[in-house]
Image 1: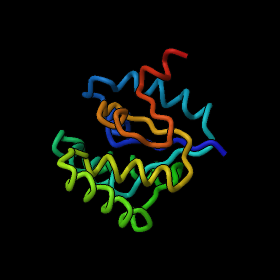
Image 2 (image 1 turned 60 degrees about the horizontal axis):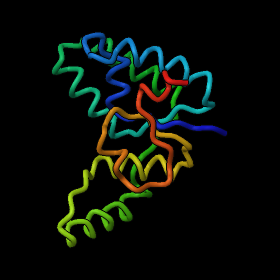
Image 3 (image 1 turned 180 degrees about the horizontal axis):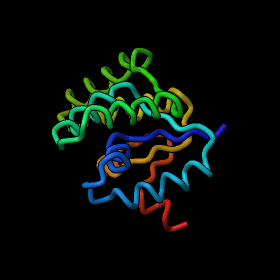
Length: 144
């Protein structure tokens, strides 16, 4: 089964018409729905979406409907089974005086643990991480 994991920025682009990539994200979402059998994200991303959408003036009812749709159409994963490993990786980076975005690490490890084949994000820092998952941005889907 083919699975793709959605980062928060992509879901926010879909939800919020005021975002620069809104139209592109909607177009890519339609492509993804045809290409992948399972759409996925993490519980943690829901809190990020709620915070940013609320700060953007999005009505609670709209956010709730979006969450209800995600809950019905996406697999939504938790971090409990990848947290210890992610903390170890983070600690190793700290000891080596290297910078790593812990939130990005958690999302990627979550996607990999759940056997997702792909990860979609507009976060350029994620593409620099050495992970065993295909990482796409919106333009990658529009090129094909």
